[in-house]
Image 1: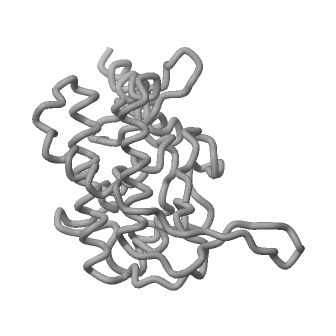
Image 2: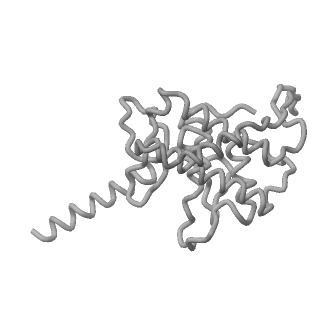
Image 3: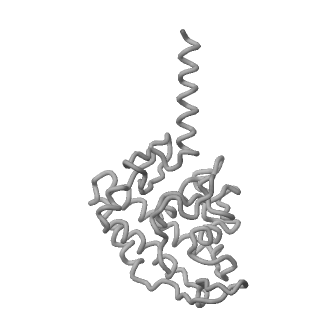
Length: 222
């Protein structure tokens, strides 16, 4: 299965979320980083009020909904995505990806060498087999030939990371969100590469609100 194109507007609604893909605590998963592998890294953000050990992908079908929202599997695909083993393998890949990508952004790739080797190892597996079928309206659509294995889905995400990291032009556009306490990374495809936040509606809006409050507080003191 091919990875998604690096277009932050692709499959994103006005709120920057994938349709029908609920994340932790009922929040919609966001798919606005521009790359599939970075969308997985973004799932490390905890839900509001969650404890430090609460895993966003675990419980209540969190991973299953992320897989559907990321278009790794069609809705209704039979898979044991609530299985702790699947969640563990995806969170392990997420950790490796986060190390490698942030090391690239910070210009210190050496400490992430072991994580990069793990990503490479996961990328070796074949992706899920696909086939073309007719939908109810007669149009050809892509579906999976059989229920996918966990290693096959991991391979799609890992390969996307390999493609991103080995493309000098795309790699040069990697950015860390400037939002306070936000650790999201994304590919900046904006005109002039001036994108500062993972989402203008989320972190950008928080910054604008904080700026307004600072101005109001300063005026109140004068």
